[in-house]
Figure 1 (cartoon, rainbow, N blue to C red):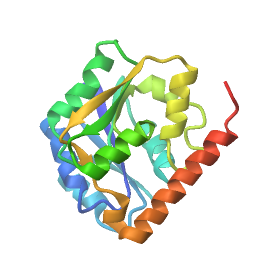
Figure 2: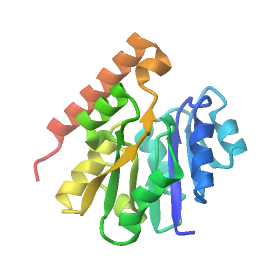
Figure 3: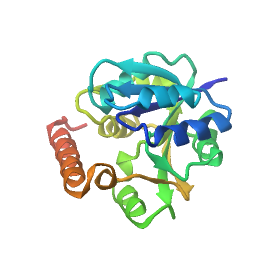
Figure 4: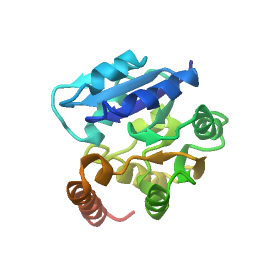
Amino acid sequence: MNTTVLIPAYNEAARIAAVVTVVREAGLPVLVVDDGSSDQTALVAEQSGARVLRLPQNQGKSRALASGLAQVKTPYLLLLDADLLGLKPQHLRSLLEPVRSGNLDMAIGVFKSGGLMTDFGNRATPFLSGQRACRTDWLRSVPNLTHQRWPEPAITEHLVRSHARWAYVELPGAAQVMKEQKRGFWPGLAQRLRMYADILRYRFRSPKA
């Protein structure tokens, strides 16, 4: 097997099993990094067939990803979020095929027809998508990967600066549980706004190419 599926997860006990099950149906090994969850995320992931790396405390998605990346030994890597809905094995194959064939350095998944709000949010900010396939060594070459809680801006910036070959790949029927649904409207909205603020600060702080 030349591909590992890496899933950073924080308090996703209600959702992680469905994602891991699809990955296992696709015949792929999966590593879940439990980012200091206070619920049963790690146990549920293990029972669903994942290998689990448990972090002692919550450190943010970037550090969870980096901790998992250090454990990966396969040449290809597929990154997934832990709260996906409507995921199918074909979605994983669609992301991996252009990378494994050598046509792309990274494929980035975008939702299509999975739900009005998730479709809109994903297409408004596709560079924030957590669904990505790439070569493992390429991801290890990304500078500043752990400088903020979310790794996607650093990854996207490195795609541009390194002149990598990348493309968006549609994931028909897939969606994501929104923060407002998981944590309640106002707490979820506040978290979303903090995320966008952190990302904007990163963009303005980063030196120009």
